[in-house]
Length: 499
Image (cartoon, rainbow, N blue to C red; front, side):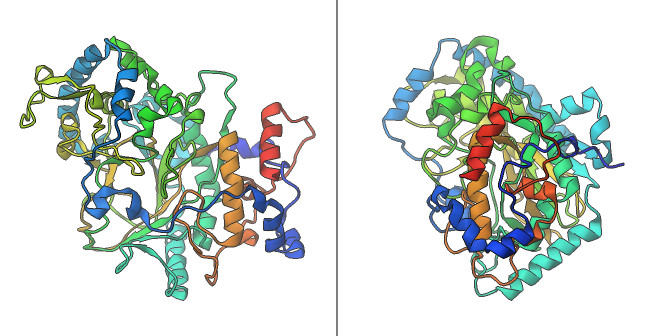
């Protein structure tokens, strides 16, 4: 039995909030005419480039740089006396936790069936939240997922003179966002149902928070078809969605207020509270590849049979503790620059240096054994268990993750990057601009700019979005099923999407 898509069985929140835009209506009006009605809302495109522009692990740059003097002042502004106690408690717990994770390995990552989503036990849900990652199996038939991959290959072949990606000489990660396969996957009922379940694991501490966690929306991302032997697409341990912004932006910083409160308050940190997240500015520097919206769960859908050592995802599976350590790390340094001791007594307060380890302006937050030694990343980053075509993988937006340094398997390791994103006003603005770009075949707004797929043969159009639920997910029109008056939040979303 397929889990209930309650958000789609009830009147879908996006339904009816746009003028009626159906495939036949688009043919009558023309895609360009529709785009012109909302073009004034479109944000300036990002710089051209690829996924490598935000990762020092792909370019070989050092991720230790001297930040401007204001970052020392920032440390002093954030610092409270009780943070030293927090640091000692976190280090103490890390010692035991890292040993346990190193012993368990990949088996620590929860694995659940798509058909069991609505009947998970409290313990299963708790485990997903503690680890911060999960594999959902069986949502999409194997042959359907493999068909998506074959169609992508044909699409890339038909446009081979225009395809871009990383690395340039042997593309493993494609700068493609608008293929028919990606569109079909995004609006697949099983994927939408899974996203709705993943969003249900979040909550809002402030009832007035303008967010609908029951309504997923589309966030276009690229795709990967990694070939056996590849050792260039080597993403080291990192966290997407901002680096220095986590401390620099007051809204983003408020997401970690309990960690900065001092003493044992870090234990009260709630990684699943959506209320402060909707005001966080993750992209203060308008960086290509930097996610600018609230994306609670990153994710991908597999198009291959891939296991450990075959170019797959790696995760750090202790969410709250690792977050507390990462947020406290800039305030402390080893007593000696040559020391390798992990003992708390061998680390001292450091408010004068501008250093935020692993953080750079216009880059993502990266980690390694030098910048974050207590995490013991060489032992605690675990490869996810084997996945089959159609399986989905999700990880919390604060989870440290990486890609295996080398693909040692015998067949491709292929995924469509499809996260779980809720409806907020800020996200609705992005959805509107993303819709405009989709109609024109341009890259999604957060990603490197340029002409994208605007001149590609066979790219997806609005006519490929055939269901009311799919059109709503992509910011087009859904089916209005009742005449209830719109609530204030709904009216605001309506105004945004009509702009």
